Image (cartoon, rainbow, N blue to C red):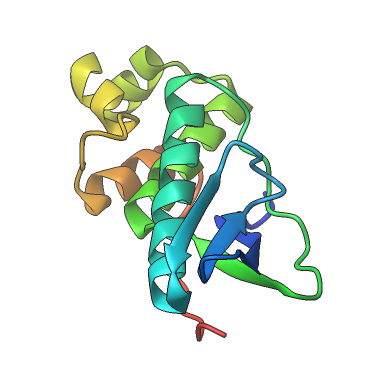
Length: 146
C-alpha cells in the first residue's frame, strides 16, 4: 500500500492589508488568511484540518497531496486528524463498515463511529489499533518548516 501524506501544498499570497491569503489547490474549499507568516501558517493548518474533517463527515474523497510547486509551502494537518483521515481512507479502500471495524476491534459500534468523528479526540493508540486491524501502520515524521 502506498505511503499516505496529509501535508498539502499551499500558496501564500500577500494582500493589500499585509495579510497572507492561503489557498490549497488540492482542496479548493480550504481558503484562509493570517496576519504575518506565523499566524498564516496557524490559520492554514486549522483550515486544512476543517477541510479534511468535513470530507470525512460528508463521506467525500480526500485527495492525495499534489507535488509541491515553486513558491508553494507544505502545510500539514494536525497528527490526530491525519490518523483519522488515514483510517477513513483505509476503511473506504477495504470496503469496511464501522460495524465491521467494531467487530474486528472487539468493541461497540459507537466506539468505532467515534474513531472517525472529528469532534471526538480518540486516543492515538486506539486509532493505531484500528489501522492495524486493516493492515496499516501509523508513521509519524518530522520536517523543518521552510
